Image 1 (cartoon, rainbow, N blue to C red):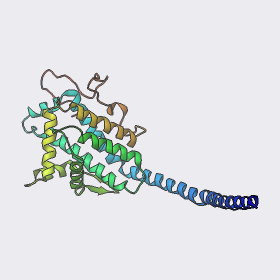
Image 2 (tube, rainbow, N blue to C red):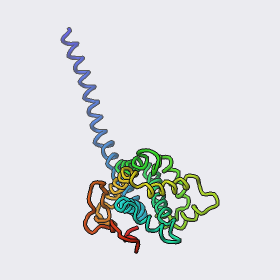
Image 3 (tube, rainbow, N blue to C red):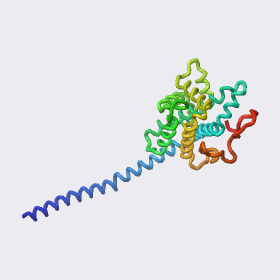
Image 4 (cartoon, rainbow, N blue to C red):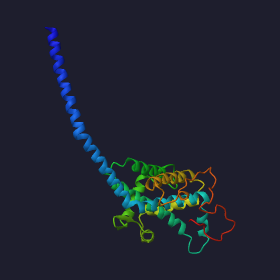
Length: 262
């Protein structure tokens, strides 16, 4: 009798397990997997569409900021000291550096909002790497994450939207800074940009981390290196020598002309 019970129990359990596995297998192959593959394809299409519409301002924002940081680091802010000697240009390098930082924050905040509904882990990680680099270290050229967001949000309201491409203009930024009461965070942006230029020796580590993280992001956005050629996306290394055909003249005997890439 016990053997019969065991056989019946085994049969029932086996039948239940077989039914479950059969149903699960059918669901997996006929419903879940096709739906998952379709969702992944849709995500890739939406990701490509997003990059297609934003690649030009993205490349500009990333490339211009990492290029400026490369020049500042490589020359010990020589262009800044050069422009300070020219009447009428004393504030140019401070304001233009602040603008390039703000322009990047505006673009990165825009991208974060647009990729929120996308499965875009790699781009999100690269954006986080840049944010972490800006927030790294102590006071100086430091921007906490919410500082970055606030600056980006303020500039986004002034963005010119043309054919789904967001652009922020330097003239608009200068108007914002020249307003009777500029936003407190924008004034802090200008002060920290000047601190970077006045104390580049103290800011080498942080500025290098930011510049390197921006190059990684640029390599993702422009993977085929169509928009920015390789020699314009070099990672700065404090211990490395200037590469051949450098973008700037690293030594200058007397102030006579601005460096090629300011």
